[in-house]
Length: 433
Ligand SMILES: [Zn+2]
Image 1 (cartoon, helix red, strand yellow):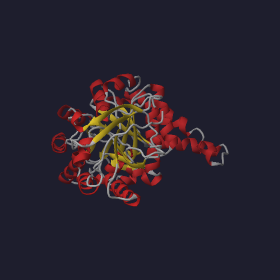
Image 2 (cartoon, helix red, strand yellow; image 1 turned 60 degrees about the vertical axis):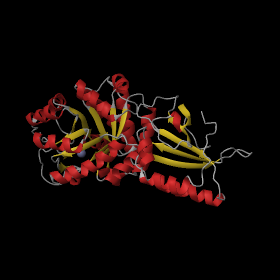
Image 3 (cartoon, protein in one colour; image 1 turned 180 degrees about the vertical axis):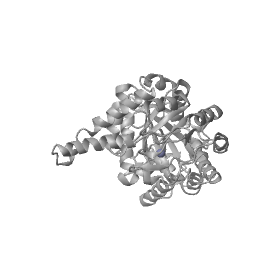
Image 4 (spheres, helix red, strand yellow; image 1 turned 180 degrees about the horizontal axis):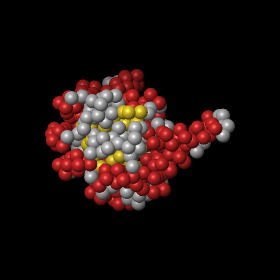
């Protein structure tokens, strides 16, 4: 139990019959912990609530794509300074530039210590598998990008993702129409010609897939613009009137202030923004080099501030400034759940018990919505009443039921665990403050 580093905000303890919502067998005694640190705020919020607030109140939240710690820190500096909700966005098309798992650790840590509402988004998820991995690592919103496929195929792939993500409470962004790349380091990731979103197709797509947010193609491009793009605001207004869900713009770099205002006025509630941040960072590096900087830290000096300045300017332009408090009270907090079982085994020696735990860790950690499966052996000097423990971290409470009914859990519990672990009871244990 020494590995329990979190602080318990509240917990419930007792038999299954006391928890009508949780259909475990009556002999199971279960603790469900809600985890929260009390020393600092934990303003991860439900992204659907966050963007609903933006849509209802006529502003857009910046979804800033980060590719390094400098980006992450710069974005958070801007959000804190402007008291704005913010989306920390990690694009699968950028995974070659960083280790997704490591940067997610930093991203969730940044969200946990923030005082403004934060959501963490998987941008341009390529597959169901990517989406499950993103959620496991801490994303609480996901995009599946099947927009390069024909309509029916886009619907099929997107629906597969929404069916799963919604079952574990995670909102989904889909894209219809196609936003191509023109120039810049992101451009080659989005080859081909623009395809505009049509209002009729958009309505059919949302109906068929139940997505929560729709990325539309109305004239923007990924990467850098060539000249000032023409945006089809009439089309956007019609899509917004028909759907009534938060709309998303990809390829925000290079638009005029006027164009941004018109986007926000017509239902755009999330703006993906990356190339301009990348260019701002690069300008600083070039300038440092021109002044004779040679080492890495000297070259990168000031990048964070440049990112923060660019994000601050856009947050203000898009109307997100000073919205943090409203969003914190309007949006449901996003909280992980710790599922704890303590038990003894019969008919197994220590090696057999260790194999049982290893098998469970392997099987249960593959269930979507499960963030971590930890097991442990009691360290008390005398014989403790319960020798073993499971600590299973769920991304949020809706996973409890999904996990219980998932075939991997049913198979493991019925065939391997319950036959030897009939003695499952709760014990008191001390947790780190
Ligand atoms: Zn994009």
